[in-house]
Image (cartoon, rainbow, N blue to C red; front, side, top):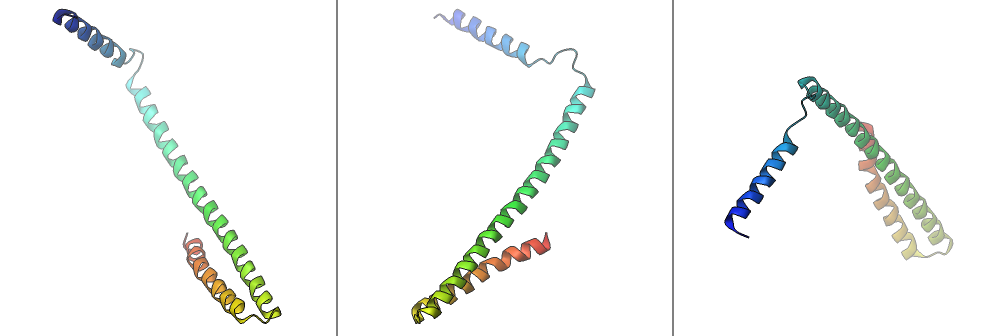
Amino acid sequence: MTELDYLFSCARLISSAVIICVPPKSCSILDFCNIRVKKKKTASKMKENQEKQIVQKIKWQIAGWILFILCAVFYITSGLKNNDVLTLIGSVIFLVACIVFVIPLVRSIKKG
């Protein structure tokens, strides 16, 4: 490929890029404004969806921690039934730990 062929191919690429980038004549400033308004509406919908997802996520987390607390209660009753001190101590510690993890979630729901 000669230098002249290279220059012509570059000129063709540049001219085709310019043609692609030029907006159609039917596009007005009002159309551009409508596009911007749609983007703002879409952004507000996205924010609402994100907030709904956060609330849903917190609800699932609380449901999971309630199940963990229920398991801890069953472990405690099992330890009491079998007179196993280590199981009882471990179960009580597990129950306290579950409650400690639930407290921030409940506070976030009350705030938000």
